[in-house]
Length: 132
Image (cartoon, rainbow, N blue to C red):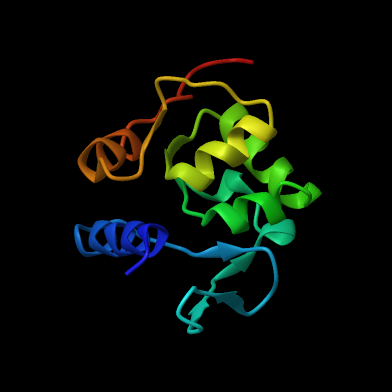
């Protein structure tokens, strides 16, 4: 199992812990994993804004991060998630994507391997009561 697929498994574990997990990908239908299988998606980046979620996990291969760095909907999605103070779990590919999107490290951004911290942060209304 490749690293980004292991991180997807961690997100699955979060779902088992009670999180309502939705998979959002660049194109309608799903995305192809390294082993050739398809990961079925619940939404498309251009039509599923981050405002719909309490938290965002960005799990990407290095190749996926490079490809998505050229996609305006993807960059807009991550910038919007950051701007709306979403808890964000990132693997190495996700970190690369945020760097390209000019998003720096923040208390709400954590490693995707730390599922307990991510679940706790996702339960915390980070933007509650704040006026921007």
